[in-house]
Structure formats: structure tokens, C-alpha cells
Length: 406
Image 1 (tube, rainbow, N blue to C red):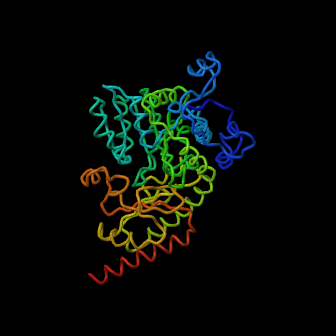
Image 2: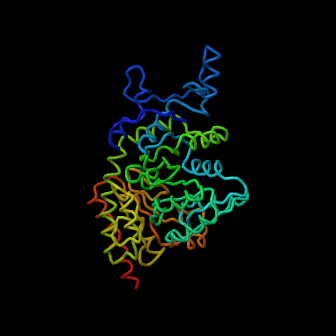
Image 3: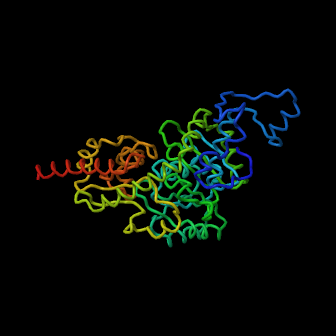
């Protein structure tokens, strides 16, 4: 777990490059080294004991902490403006560890129906086995959520924007409701990133990222991270160090490297996603578009209030013709990987039935408002004009096929 340090007096872009690294640059190196050592030795047993008890800075065993991993945690901590951060082997490890750290039998968690598919499975399948009551609310009904929170709540778990339908929840409003009953507010900030949104400033207690996505940005390293107060993060860290979902040093290095260009990538992805959403919104082959940057989005006003620099690099859209149209459209994209990932420098596209909610049945997806013909489109850093042309030619091909068969 990272230690509290003096924050850099700089903007997010500079923190992305320099944050958390100074202490770990050794022998004149300009990059944080990858420390693969499993254990760390001490000649003095008293010093060893002090480090083991957390009374002195240092490392004991790789499952607990590692210098390369510490540097990654510190960079995220600075970007989120948190007191502390701790990391995990995957984003789902971060989510599950937080929930199982904070919840006990008899507790009640309130969340939304539109969470990521893996998170939804924890709520519907795993937590009830441990006698944790789960209440999933309509994501668009803030009054209903406030009522459920008031009925009793240990943890309020939110995701905004949601995956894959890009709904937005009012973090300040719901955090106020949670504080009235002493609930802990946890926010998945993966889609927004700390460049676009700061949940801790809006009332959250803990912020979660699947670092695999936008933070790393290159689709070459799995990881997760949790930020918040020292007290809360220490609780989560203790659960993780015992249960062992540790971030590998090489993954930490790759994530560190990727984060150096976070602000540049997000700037381009914000710009392209908005332009693409506006284009698709007017296209006759498109049934509907989901992107909070659109003025017609049901939660645009909330998004404009709490997302400061942009609306993120992910959008989703449904084609006229449903799943059959999707089958024709996706293989015709030249500048998109058809894969189960998002947030990378390359554009990635696919339907939730094979990506975000592959673990769910069609009936469960329908209950979450996810049509089978929906396409999640994660914008890369390619030129906006090329992506628009690529979408245009793929949509024209689908329209031509539909015209011939009708």
C-alpha cells in the first residue's frame, strides 16, 4: 500500500508523467525499474520487524508490496487526489475485494441495475450466498435510490458512466443520501478516468479502476486499483494482502508506462467519441446512440456538472435490424478490433453479449436495458476523420445489404 506523500503542485497531465516516480528512480535511471524480487532482506532483525509491522517504510514479501507496484499506486493516488491507494491483479479483483472487505452477513448494499456484468454477478450470485442483502435500483430513478438508501445501507456502490449503456448517476446527490445513514460510497470510475471525473471530490469514499482499460491504455497489462482515505484503503489492503490478488511488478511497470500518456489519450478519445456520437445520432441506419456528451442524452445535465474535461472514450449504439445488422456491420470495420476490451489506443468494438455482459443470460441483459443488437464502441487514438470514414463505409454496406434483401 502506498504511503502518504506531498502531492505535486501540477496539473493532471504533468502528474500522469511524473507522479509517484521520483522516489523509485535509481542510479540515474529515468524510468521506474521492474523489481521482480519475491522477498526483501534485512541485516538488522529489529529493522525487519519494524517494516513488517508497518512502523517503518520498506518491503517484506511480494504478495504484500513491491517498489514498482508502489510507484503505480502513487501515480493513481495523485491523479485521484486521494490519501492512499492499493492495487490488484485485475479490475474485478479490486471490485470483489472492496465488497468483501466492507460487507458482512446481515449487511445491505444498494446499487444500480446497470453495473458491469461481472459486478452484477457478484451482486446477484455471490453476495446473497453470504447473507448480504442486495438492492439493485433503476439507474435513472434517483428518488428510488434515495429511498432504498434511507431504508438502511452499509455500502452504496455506483458506476458512472455505466458499462455499456453510458447512463450517468448524480454522485453528489446520492453521496449525500448515503452520508445520512452512514453508508460507504464506492464508485467505479473506469469509464470516466480521473482526467474527466473525480468521485472523491463529489462525495465518494472509495474509487475503483480497472487499470487494464484507460489507465494502462495499451491492452497489454491486467490490473486494478482502489483509492480513498488511508483508513478505508488500509482495510482493503489488509484483505488483499491475505487473499493474495496481488498486482504483478511487470504489469505495474506496463501500467505506469501507459499512464504517462493518459491525458493525451483521453483528450483525443473525448474529442473523437463526441464527434462519432453526433454522426451516428443522425445516421438513418442507427436506431439509438448512448453517449452522455450528447445534448439529448437523458443524463447530459448531470454529466456536464460532474465530468469536467470530457465525456469519455466509450459510446454505444443500436442498429436498425438488431443482431443481424450487428453481424453484418462489425466485420466490415477496418479500424477496430472485435474484442472484449476497452480503453486502449486502438478502437475496440463488440456487442455486450460477447463483451461486458457475456456472463449474463439474454433475459438478464434485457432486464438491464441492454438490447441484443447493441454495439459498444471504445474509441482509440486514431484520427477522428478515419474513424468516421470507417463507420460510414461499414454502415453503407449494411444498408445496401438490407436494401437488396427487403
